[in-house]
Image (cartoon, rainbow, N blue to C red; front, side, top):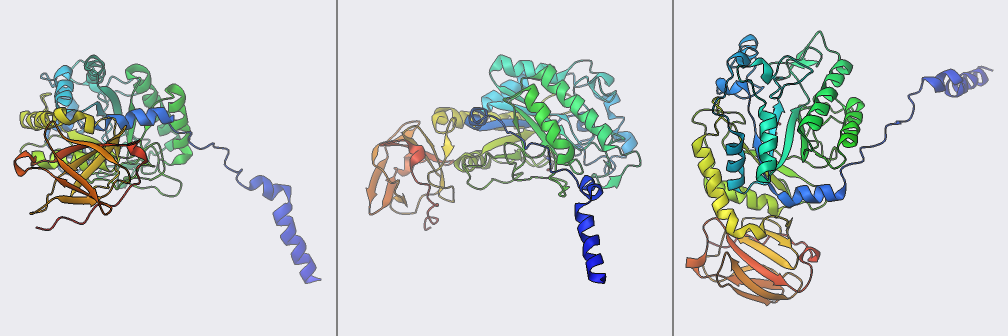
Length: 449
Ligand code: FHN
């Protein structure tokens, strides 16, 4: 008898209308439809962009967001905007510095973790309108990009360590706010994102960051709202944390349209779009006398990134007076001077077919394979895996001769030492078919020295 009763109770639990009604409905949330393939392809073609981290924190020389409640007490940090007056700011100059570097798009922090908005937002008083600098740098930059032919994007920090409704606060997003109300914060965030798209768009990209406890429960509908507002916008993988995975940095692999390896070159991947974000110095925001990367490292980072089929978003932190530090501008100009005569090997290309390595990197476009040789053997030709097709012509970029021979499944290349370039010797190979169809191969072992 007891068994029958127990079974009846068990069945009633599973089949009673009450328990069924209590179960969470299967997710009615459609997945993120993603950006149209042509929007992704366009974004990939650009290959190289400028990242900018800027705000009143530049007055301190400490890191944006992270120094709030650390090097700078919270109340002092939150009052910096009252002195922020970057009278030397010139959007045309910034965009021309990016253009001279060979950068094709620009992404600036519209709001970082500290909550300060560099545009006059109707949703907060903590914005550029509350500073002595009675202008709209976001608008001026968007217009300058359009004027000079660069694409414009906005970085927007999902976490907001100052806003009372965002659950986490300074220092470092590791404190809990008693006033937390994620639904209210979601309204604030969606209102601001709409402002950015509506008043400063169309944008190439929305570059979200550090969602922490903002998960797909809110994020998925926010992303879908964004895509309704601007269907061809490209969105990175930090708009929200996947359910149950609240992470500080949330470089989630499959959220959004592209992955975001940070301060490192991502792995070769032609399937999942990706973009390395990296600082030209060490700090994201302005830091006096910061250590700046040498020219060869800047350029070889770009070449290894595009060789892996990624984009490079290279960061500067402008000064409190509104200028990009002259030595950083000089470094970027030198990058552009090297890139320009080799532009066809960089823009509009895809990574491979030989994966990056100590030897160098490769890109491809049309019926051309471009090799960026960075390390030659001490004696004799460089030996690479054969390309699985006939090489019908070969030349150096910007100009010059190269000896090429395909033998025993290997590609032998040689260039007179005096014609080799210390950054990378660029060789254009013409092949007898679409270069993108050439099977991808691993990099060769490092040449012997
Ligand atoms: O905390 C931020 C950091 O300040 C910077 O904005 C980088 C850029 O990708 N994102 C976060 C660290 O992952």
